[in-house]
Amino acid sequence: MTLHSHFSLKNYNTFGIEAKAKQFTAVHSVEELKTVLVNNPTEKKFILGGGSNMLLTQDIDALVIHIDLKGKKIIKENDDFVWVESQAGENWHEFVLWTIEQNFGGLENMSLIPGNVGTTPVQNIGAYGAEIKDHFVSCQAMAIANQEIRTFSNEECHFGYRESIFKNEVKNQYIITSVVFKLTKRNHKINTSYGDILGELEKNNIQTPSLKDVSNAVIAIRQSKLPDPKELGNSGSFFKNPIVLKSDFEKIHQQFPEMKYYEVSATEVKVPAGWLIEQAGFKGKRFGDAGVHKNQALVLVNYGNATGQEILAVSKNIQETVFATFGIHIEAEVNVI
Image (cartoon, rainbow, N blue to C red; front, side):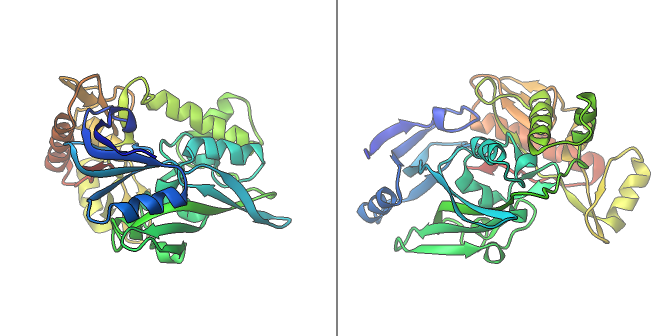
């Protein structure tokens, strides 16, 4: 465990932005994490997972601690369910594939989401009709101030749409070290109703899909729409899908009858942000080395040497234009640093 000064973070963020950390270290165990925190009590801390949900707009004037804890295990099971614990530094997609190989159901719709397991509860990540909160049991987290380990239950995490206690009440106070999920061993609830999954399965003549079939369908859809960060810097979906009051939406919908939407409650609807951005004319648009992906308007990309500030400027341009066009505000899903 070494402390590096003026360390480049270019290979530690999926946008591929060049930014420097004042100090950097990677920790591979809970003990190493505790040691770093104890030895650097006054240093500002920045916790880094897979680097997939952030946009670096400046150097990090802090001690960057990269959470690289590895390992996964079954901690409990019965005839119907299994409780699996994963360390925070495990790659999320690889972990999902491992659960499918074991025939454990629940996470397959969230295949190919970038990032590590430890950051999934922070964002309550989700895709194709599934969210972490649906299968999350608890997580262990270390308090930065006194290194005490606390267990957060599902209820204590206050999950919402891309929200949790870690983004709000206890933000910057804890470091998640492991996560427990409850998954099915049989009678899997196969969810093919959202997005293009059913169409992808039909294309492959699959009528009774397995967990692997659903995962493969999601992977194919995501790969057709989303660029590989190793080839084109990006952070997946940059914006949240906005949730709008039905009373407000009805007025907007009269003006734009072709606008897509999904009911989320008796009083609210969710509007696809990608549709709004595409209709506003940004899909495939390039501004120097920053731009909007040609296949998915939700994804902002770095074509090579864009700075974080340049990508941020594109995102603000999009937000302002969408609001001016539709009267709907779209929020960034990505953390802007």
